[in-house]
Image (cartoon, rainbow over all chains, first blue to last red; front, side, top):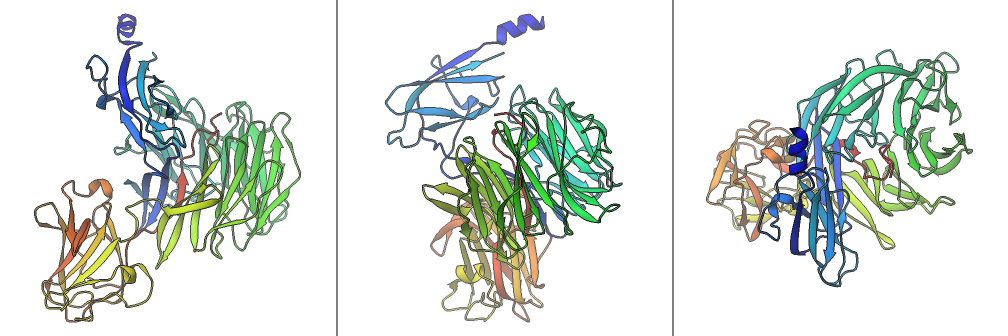
Length: 122
Length: 485
């Protein structure tokens, strides 16, 4: 049963057309564990995206070419970028199960327009 | 974002700058999951984890209950397994493997790395051939009463180290009276051990991983009182960067291209602590906390841009207020801008010229504004107020809403206070809105006098400040946390 279900749900794909990329490539995801020493010690988690504008895409915020909204989580996603103009873009790091980061290549004057092929690799 | 994870009674819950505590799962169905390890008491270590966007964290999982109250370290491998190295209450250096399975970390039994004399402040790393390395301060109490940087390794996931716990491993440093501190990085076929001896001398030894042979010690830099106030990282093109915040002041950076060292670069002229470095490609990404005075620090971010470095506050929520206004109901003018005076440490320079106080009569207000939401107000006074009562308020888009700070009522009646307006940024009200006060759009919090002061408080420093320390930065996927690139 599980095998059949996996076959039915696996290898799903979504094509998102004409997606504009504006994110900067040199963003740094600064995630820090630290101590705040105020009337005892607080263990805090601090996270900031620094060094530019980060473009983080949640799958659930996209609409594919059929008008479908992808699920909020995709297992082992892979993303292929199909360029639609002369500017280049790339996926930053490993795509997450609920989101991914995309950026234009350094020095691109024009915001890249791309098609995104999102695949679930089960 | 700032999220409170726990309170702790340990001496240094989040460790020492050269050590690692925060990790990201690199692959599989739980890719992106963060794991944070911290000392939650003098003798125990805990783990919490969270998935993107990291607003909700798991309950604390006990990892060790026999730890000495001194900094520990860990690393994560490509399968999400975490390897914890810590000193136990008997001062024996131990390792536990936390096996990652089904999204959970299962704690294994402790194996002794070394049980001879005393050991402190380990760092642990897994290289690309799955060999574990551990560097530590070995205090030879029974031999010469000196400290050594030593290295040991394990080829069986930490079950045995060298020939066993009685094996001293390789002494990387000479013998020193003062404690020694080390960190470890790997690039391709080479392991870099960066360590501080004699409190002030940073040294380097390089190990060729294929035969575990160590090159001779070389000097990186000598600066007064470095101790553990340094960190090191490797770029994807094999450059070794070191950032240092000596106790004597300033933030320094130095880089090794594999053959020669570049010059010592002063990044910022300031007292700072808790330096952290990672590389994004070939660009060093540096975080440290800068002293704003009176024990308050702001996390700073520094990155190379061309031939220079650009520095900014790492978080828009922590640091100097973007605007500080004092308002006297019966003053003329009513508003006075005290932003600069509130940021500096000059004593007693934050007051309204009419009342000669920060606050005085019923209806007087202190406005604290920032372009991002904040959760704390550090209030340093030269004169404490007597007799007055204030209420704290935020703007919800329609009106000022009264609230009681998370840390309790504060009426400007003690000289040095960290007022936790809200426990953390996630606890700040969702209805808090930007509004223009005296021509400035910002997130504002105001303290409004409801009972006048007999003695007016006078301010020295007002900050969206933090006494932040011992930052442990998550390093990117470049092999720095034991994950092969």
